[in-house]
Length: 581
Image (tube, rainbow, N blue to C red; front, side, top):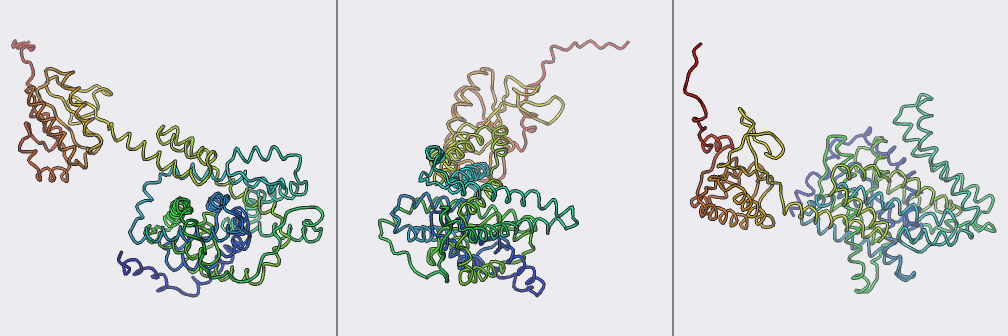
């Protein structure tokens, strides 16, 4: 990879940077930080880690992405899906090494993404279909909601699958903490109220819709502060037995290499690979969506480097795997953030939080953080998308449903792999038997369509087989079988035209099959013709002797072929008597 190409335009935004842009970035950074503080605490707890780990993952990693990423709006840091994947990975690891393992997981994830970035592997984004991503996020969101029920009920649940969580929760229904249920339920209601109702009220009062949405986004911090005050005043964490955040160590994150053995790193390789794929796909999808709104674009290879570097830095500074946050990035965009400098400012604000504000978090109830996560995940549930996919395409629908169920049954770390593998298998299966209909002409026109779907003109002696996909080793034999069936069904056929409008590539195996088809047609006194070939395919034929051995001709268009090959009309059916009356 040419580093000059990677970094040549990296900081072009600095050329026109001015005071007004700084003011916009500064305001956006404040708003994003207000949203990030409670989220990073909640997601760290979701990952099964102490709350300060979420703060650590929200400082220096943001600097790394701002320096190497390609998006002006993406905000990286702890997110719900990656946190749940981290929790699933470290759940079976001894408690004393979980923090180190989380850092090692981030380091491996970052290393894989950086290597992929240097090899320009951004194309892997194309292998993960949108139905898979949508179904995966829906399944993960549902799994996260169930995983937070333990904090709402005040019980302990160890399972990493939905059905295991449900079973564990049912067995502990008589042990629920009433105060946890009360604070959690009230928090959920308040979070939903400010999200759904507050923007409407503010707009009705005359506030612009943009600012109404931003205020509604920041309102949860007010709710959290209120619960912290109530918890401190009434000592929720004392005799009431309500689980609270407790002491959060103050100070900046430590710079250290996760000191684990080689076998321990080896055990983290597969989870790191899965997290790397999800982090890249999720982050890049968000970055592309926001860039398109400003008629911009993101460089997927630079995104690999940016997200990889931020994860590697997270692993070296006491954090855990991170990716781009959809909610915080959208807030950054809506708040008027203009450049990656927003990320640097957010990192500074989070560093100040780590230094001076952690004591204020002591009395924060875990049930309130769980409520924040649940409400955030409700917006990620998109069952309509799965249904639309199913009604439009059964193959894509099967992939989406399988991905969704895999997340619930096997856990979040396997859902995306099941979806990607199944999507590729179904695609390969479909490409093994591409659409190859016999076609005919609409009478009096130059238009040719499927003979089994339209009333078209056909001839027993001349048949046209339209190939609607590229020909390669996997479907070459299918073409041979298709031609053999045509020969068997139409004994009067003297000419077969392969209409190649949909063929953009013919590999060596397919060329061998065409040669064999040409030979077999010769043996039954029939000729093989080609029509409507793309120039790139025709030019490649000249590297072989196929055209020299071709029994028929190569026609520029299908109509040219039919004009040349169609049989003469049977004039005997017409009378030679001319009626002049």
